[in-house]
Length: 447
Figure 1: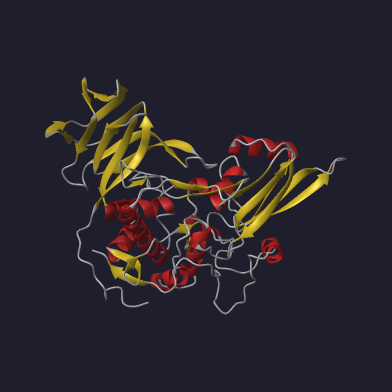
Figure 2: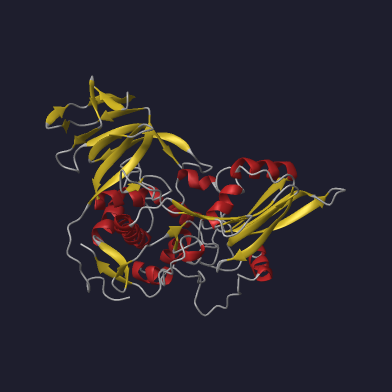
């Protein structure tokens, strides 16, 4: 990778609009310092906005949109009450969160949305401290600063061209292929939860090291040629990275390809072949992300993430009744008793792209990986890199137990957070880590 200062693109640091709470009937908040509303001072204190007749009601007045403006983004702060984090995941919960910058409320058809307006670099200080521990190693923090900045700017650029929540394609009768990307955030640039990037304002305290990592990589992004990289990341790839188009839209990204999360000269079996994938997943081969080092894991796994003990290799067991009920509730389709879960197509990391569900009443094929994960879990299955063992058949030959043995946590595309943490621990610089996870790319200064 070349000198990060070799290429510079002269633009001003942008302000980011982050959706914190969406479509609420009312929102309680506290202004921790004085703000301005329409040029008039609003003193610190506790406040409430409510939905009333399709408008926002605040202090006896009604609005379609209101913004509490800060004078200087580093000084003012506010607190939003009962912010939901981990939406749809097994760690979902509510907490009060504090933010710097301005606070905007917008009225929609279904409720009020709260938006934080903040400078991009201040946004990153929170993202780095929310996505992982603020006490992580310096090279890991620098690495994540660059990819978080790159991802956000790429999404904002993409948003100017097209807005798309998810694409559904009925490939043939009995088959549903669906992939999910960031939602159609028409009211703001990015949401604050795992769906985009974790952003919890100044609730997650930053450190001098976080500030140093942000400052020393200021404006720095990953680029492929003249293209700003859509720098994806997940918790744990499970030993091999997945190819972009196997997870999202069928547009090749040369820097988001299937490759091993270990030294390049180590042979890798073809995990698109079922027997190879089964052997790989049932083993625990060496990889950067194959670690039980508690000190390293604490850098990546925040509070509630540490409730997940197994991620490189994991196992889930369902009874027949549990699985058939779960699939019906999650998909809205009654398959009857589940006879088999049959992988039809796997990606470069062994993640299932198309899965056939064979039931006593219906047979359907579903995909892509997140749709599979959503269908087979109350929240989200850790990944779609799994093999199925159907056991304990009854007199009709229908299995009464299904064991899913899997690899990795997340979609596996791009940077593997646990793998990157181990690389930093082993002495790799942030530019070397980025080269490993985003091949053929370079660092440039975007502003």
